[in-house]
Image (cartoon, rainbow, N blue to C red):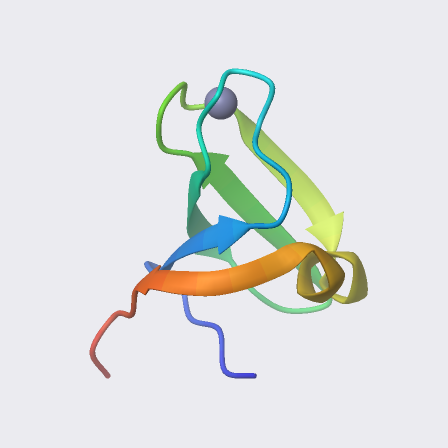
Length: 62
Ligand SMILES: [Zn+2]
């Protein structure tokens, strides 16, 4: 799977705030994502991110 900074993704689990869209802020071994609804940022290992990933909402053009 090809993830890029700026992509908007949906995760399998909603954030406690009710939001389910996340913006990718950083890729690599660790991913940083931001809940679009509340702005909360989460850092997590790539493998964990890929497990929780559901689908792309918006793919940034290369
Ligand atoms: Zn949130």
